[in-house]
Image (cartoon, rainbow, N blue to C red; front, side, top):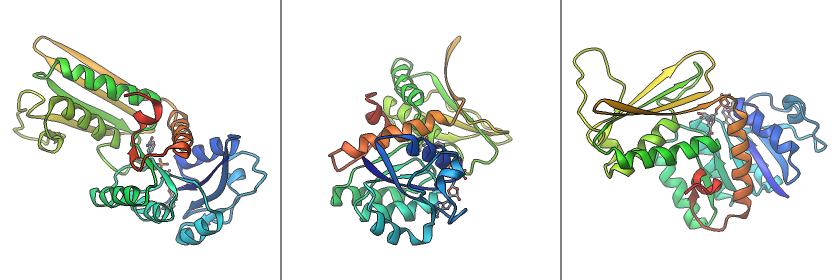
Length: 274
Ligand SMILES: NC(=O)c1ccc[n+]([C@@H]2O[C@H](COP(=O)([O-])OP(=O)(O)OC[C@H]3O[C@@H](n4cnc5c(N)ncnc54)[C@H](O)[C@@H]3O)[C@@H](O)[C@H]2O)c1
């Protein structure tokens, strides 16, 4: 059985991952960490019978918790600031990390990758763990290959509580498109268009528009618009339920338990979509 620690255990995503992990016969939840509901039983918070009666532990005591419980894998859906501290603690303690949190800084990603390689502790980082969205990335890349001179725009919509914008998934699909075009993403990404004269540079090799909508309780919609002369293709992915994402996290935990290479795996590698 794979021993796991859940970071951000009682958030929207953390609760679902906790529920699925507690119900999974191949996974043993040895610790659950958050900054809220400390001391409460995880099972009763997420509505599952937990024979081990794991209680929510205080994130401030993470080092002690990992020393005591010795998890194989950490799964983190919290905040960028929390992940950057907690997952460095975990990787340095030789715990394999599944990171779902978005909005992570480049500094953290570089330092984390350095630790993964030097300590030989594989990890998975993915802005979107749903199976369908990872197929969507692949199809976006294939379409781009055929329409390199068209205009390409990414439009995403999420709930009104989302902190980062644009979404990690929109950034990923933007990078996938840039890679297929053979251009550097940072030089072509155009985030929204402000009021006033704002003419588009024609062709995705010069500009990829990325637009974020925040409204209501939308779980996560992504649309890629490929527009050419007289026609367009719209490639759309919509998440109806966070279960699609939480199920992906469970797949990543199981994949990582067996993974041997000292690298950060993508969700496409976890799902065998390459
Ligand atoms: N990769 C994916 O598939 C995917 C899917 C959905 C959301 N996300 C991302 O996951 C993250 C969490 O999303 P959410 O909707 O569950 O948010 P949320 O606000 O509902 O949950 C975050 C949880 O983290 C906890 N937390 C805060 N500081 C902490 C700390 N120092 N240590 C441990 N826990 C701490 C909070 O108390 C809360 O319970 C966001 O970055 C979001 O963009 C990723």
